[in-house]
Image (cartoon, rainbow, N blue to C red; front, side, top):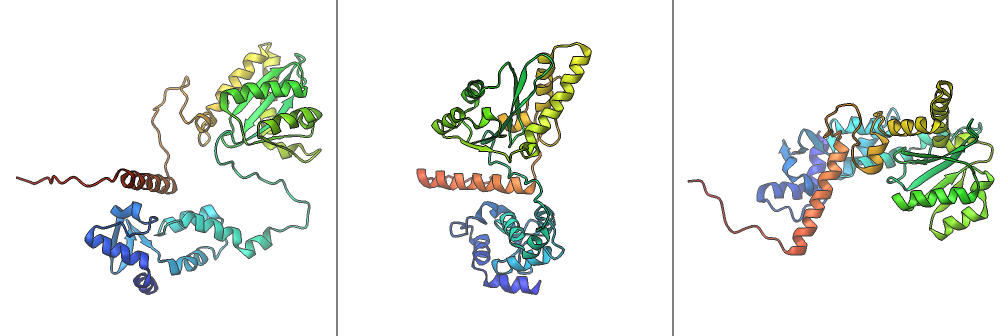
Length: 320
């Protein structure tokens, strides 16, 4: 604690906050701190944000090293650090520290064949899509499966043919509804590696990538959906019901699945109504999301106020 006090006295940002708390002028405070100006106070020369100690910049690495002694992963480190301390950009600092840890990298190396690589989550819905076919089915048709790798939202449709022309026709229909993705991944089947499909993707600015040959698990999201679809279709076949109806019912119920955030909510930005009664306005916000939200709103306010030359009103409220 004595190190924190001494370093805080030498930290320009923290000293600017001390002055701002006295005079109310936050213009000179670093933007990373300014959005939280109502949450700061000093206790025994230690700056607090609510009940968390604000760590001066010179001690950031020291705190990260202490929290990483047992080589915890980034998510566990975030939870531990957020219980006690804070500074602007702490989450990004934790992620970088974990990535750069030599010991973690050394232990992670393996002379055996490389395991399946987990794709990084895309930045938003409909940025990176994966596609594949399931079939042929008992009705002589195939199912074309398209998965959004951010939301896990699935689009699937029966098709009688699987040529590149049919694939492009389906993609055009989907892209008309939802816009063009940035990346499209498929296996190495002829219909997905044809020059016709390559030309189409080039024309529309889509990066077409292919998985490792003879390694179906590399296209994992589509493979998982195919297994689930096959189970549903087998049950439908045994019951003598319509395969088309079974497919639509599966897609609808899967899109509303509540393990985490439903795919339909992530994809479309709203909660879908279904047959089960529920309270519509539910919010699951952690500290990290709250920080991003208040920072974005503060920056937007600062930009707008500066752009329009906003000033505080001259009228003052007095108590009679």
